[in-house]
Amino acid sequence: LVASMEEVQETYIMVKPDGLQRGLVGEIISRFEKKGFKLTGLKLFQCPKQLAEEHYKDLKAKPFFPKLIEYITSGPVVCMAWEGVGVVASARKLIGVTNPLQAEPGTIRGDLAVQTGRNVVHGSDSPENGKREIALWFTEDEICQWTPAQAPWLR
Ligand code: RTP
Image 1 (tube, rainbow, N blue to C red):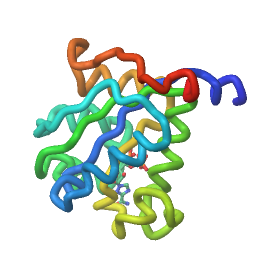
Image 2: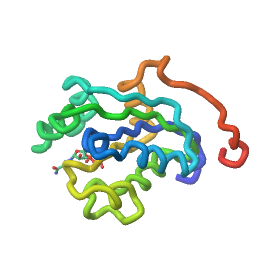
Image 3: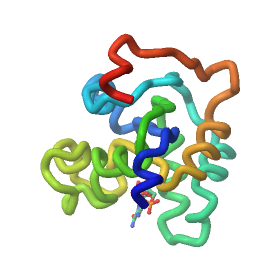
Image 4: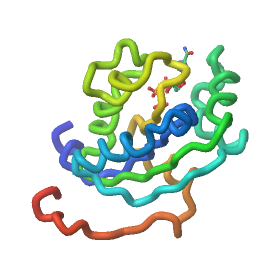
């Protein structure tokens, strides 16, 4: 566990359609930037149904699956790739638990959302899924490697 917390990882973060409609894109990006993670991919994107189904394939048997697909494809999303030490678990902490009413104040969902079915943001749940989801939502040339000026203090 300690080793994985120190490992440079990548995670897929997505502002869901409600986050975009409510004008929360800047606020959400800002939280990951201020934490000290590095943005390596960013785009506004209308998700096709097929991609939504592939992204959420593990939830296919859930009763809420059709509503979830409808939600995610209801308008554009903001796709992001973020890189950093322990970024996968840390991003999930910054986001808060799935049900926004149970998410702690100070988290994105705890501060900005009410309903599970409108919980404004997605974050990968493991380093493996981080890689899988970035490959699913981005082409290789949409990911940029760069060195932040403050890198020595953050990495
Ligand atoms: P995400 O993948 O979006 O980061 O969410 P998560 O890990 O916190 O939650 P997960 O269980 O993977 O569910 C994915 C998304 O499906 C919607 N959901 N609706 N009972 C319901 O109506 C229900 N449960 C889950 C949420 O939008 C959740 O984020």
